[in-house]
Amino acid sequence: MAGVKEKVVKMFVETNCPSCKALKSFLNSSNMKYVEHNIDESENKVDALMLNIYSVPALVIDNRVLKANEIFDSNNSLRKNEILKFVRRD
Image (cartoon, rainbow, N blue to C red; front, top):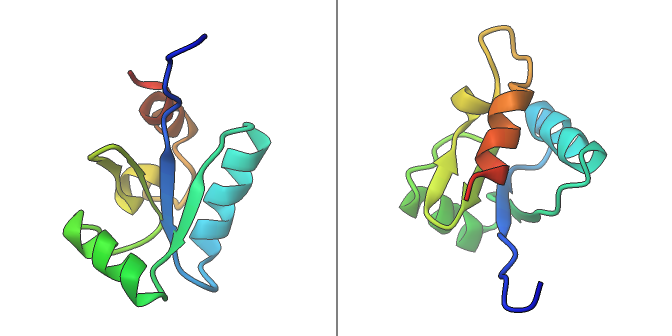
């Protein structure tokens, strides 16, 4: 559709983060596009802190944030339905 702007999904991660790798794998297998922001880089860390992101992984669309405790349940399993709802929400 002409004129429809695609949502930009930002994923905040850090190097050697197993939870980040699990989320990336899920997003890739679901054919979801995202832009990765590694908080090991100071500019990305500042951006994360400005969004009140203190742990990773986290997803951001516009100013909406889905934080690690919302992405994973208490058993450290992905909350796939919550992630899909967050990404697909208008």
